[in-house]
Figure 1 (spheres, helix red, strand yellow):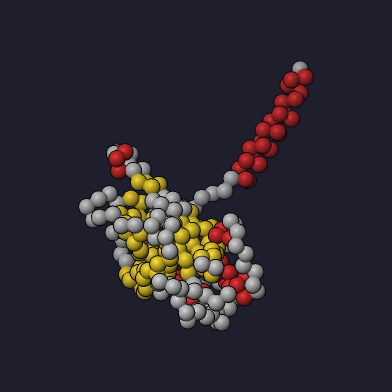
Figure 2: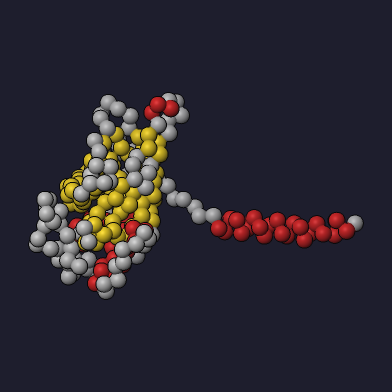
Length: 236
């Protein structure tokens, strides 16, 4: 009899624990983009990437920017270590980029930038979609991945950075086709990040929360390039 009297209490505890687990579960909002969807080139931007598997010096790269209206996604088309990559940003990701850049500019102007392990993730993360391929006749891999928004110091200069985590493609029909993209970081001067932010803003429905300040204000790059290359730097 005592056991049956305790049943309501046990039932309540089970429901409470389940509710806590549900509340703590973060829903991952993935999205997909078809390379066959209608698309148009909407601009070009410059950014920096590392060479030699992330161990070399920064190298400036011109990246094509495309818009896929069906999926409302913007694509950054770039090359890295003999592969062609298509990095997609949905509307939520574009808004996060704009807001993260505003916070970075505030920290930059206030001289609050600190070199530590947390700085590349300081302004949060977004979900992206990646399509990558080595040659036109090889496997075209695709998968969602996480991108961290923050900043990184290189050669004692800060860069607004997008740290792209690995994307894992699994082919259920042929294991030999499985692919994992490398983790990599995109480095932006403030002027370069502002150019991409302006493109992102042009392709966002007006009801999104966007910063009021002009991202191009008070942005200067050093006129003296680093030795042995022409990679731009911000004065800091």
